[in-house]
Length: 286
Image (tube, rainbow, N blue to C red):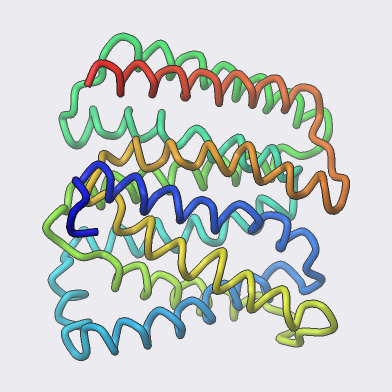
């Protein structure tokens, strides 16, 4: 990693993180535990795993780093906790493809927030992409109203907002390490779930699926995604989530035959194509 440029480091971290995340939606779908039980384990297992690793690496400096993160750390804990909860509940209340398409809008949301809070000027092409993206979202929302998936779609969009805010927070705090804040966020997720959980029991396949999901699809990626924006722009990190939008539904379709609606496929294709084309132009110009 020392021989890589910041661009290469950030891109590699984001790519590896998203590749680990792609089967996450499938694991959520095939698990039999109730929603809040799943949220609890997706909080407590990654928390314990990463917390002990952080203690080995940083020792008691972990707490010093956490305190030094200041208000950036508080914002990141809040957004990280919210997105971890809304993502699971969204998957449980709409098609996987719908949730992932909503999350794919995070780069455009990051561009808007960067303009507002970081004063990173967005060009005309970016604003055109934003308008096209949100028109596609409205198209999908209209379809979801008819199918009764609107609640899940809204939570998916809230997840995208949280991802964008989190990425902007990391970008604005380049000199700070927010991994400890993310670890605390996981503890908050587990604690919040305790108020609603019906059963802690893991039965049959869940004994393997839930721990595997929590380590491979949650613990490892969240560390990598937290580090990546220190090397490349927040919007660029979120671009890698387009891979999850494409690959995630394929996993679900191959294993459990869940098919998205035509409107979701069309709207999703417009969103992915718009963001991908916008990114290509941006990278070419830079």
